[in-house]
Length: 186
Image 1 (cartoon, one colour):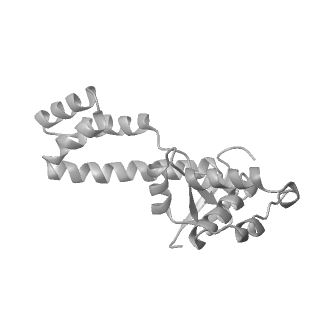
Image 2 (cartoon, rainbow, N blue to C red; image 1 turned 60 degrees about the vertical axis):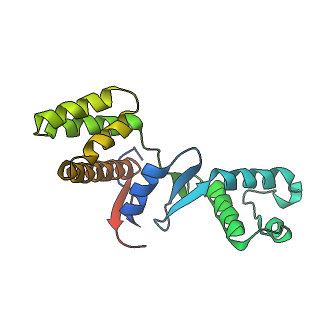
Image 3 (cartoon, one colour; image 1 turned 90 degrees about the vertical axis):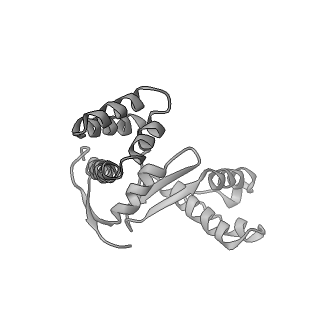
């Protein structure tokens, strides 16, 4: 299969995927479940706990291709939500690339390019000049938003434009992964 060739149709929640694109960071990663279409988050803290479990577990408990950490978790006094998160992270670890794929991080260069493209469409020359000035200095994203805060109509237009660009990137990524999305609630 070549990249971009549609190989599966998958029911996904595009809004959740968009949030994952924007929220992925060193503190948390998101994965797309290729069986269910669900977007799954794993925090760095859970990932580190899982690595510690792998390191400290007796070899016979983590031997084989599929590691069942349930017996280990049963011996630990952790809240049930944490055990569930560790089971899910383990499942992702065991099935990565087969059942789960990483949702990519949003690139700041894409966001910067979006701001540039938006500015070219602003009709008010004075506002356009202020926006160009805002993105040319330190903290361009913050300054851009600050300028738009004084212009509610353009600010709303920016939100619509930005959402549209994010949706385009999500759809492009799905296509690159060979997935035709069937949108629907999860």
